Length: 166
Image (cartoon, rainbow, N blue to C red; front, side, top):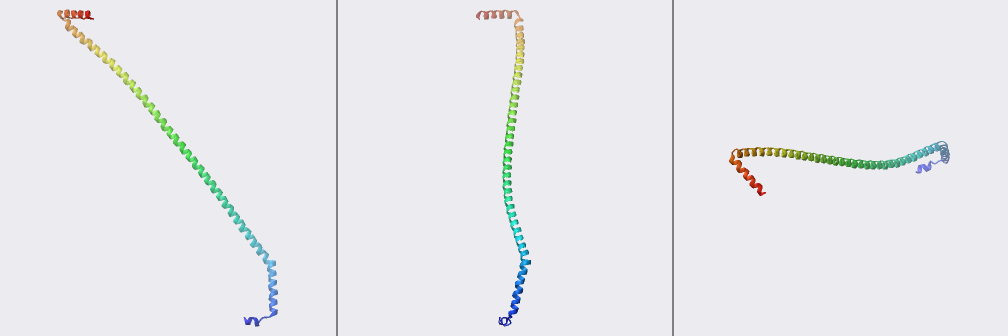
């Protein structure tokens, strides 16, 4: 430090100050303005980028809320469609059951009617057979009883006795 103080030259110091002031003046005139303009331009660009990012963030939030609303609406519509499909399925099943039951009851009533008519036809046939058999038996009995004269007389007397009692 002593050497620096001993070698100090006042004239050199003034020239260095003049050159420094000139350099500052030149820098101010030719370099500071473009540098400051570039810095200000960059600052504006960063501000615009931050604003754009903020706007994009808000827009993304709006889109997200819109997507959630659309998703909720789609879910609600899906649920209503599923409910409607279940109701249609249940209605179809109930309709099919009722139609099947009606058809079954109709078939049962037709079968009962057919059984009843077959039963009546069988009963009529049975009565016809019983009556023809009864007539054949009565005819054979009467032939046997009426084949001799004593039997005929007894039969007539018996019938007359029965007729008087009634």
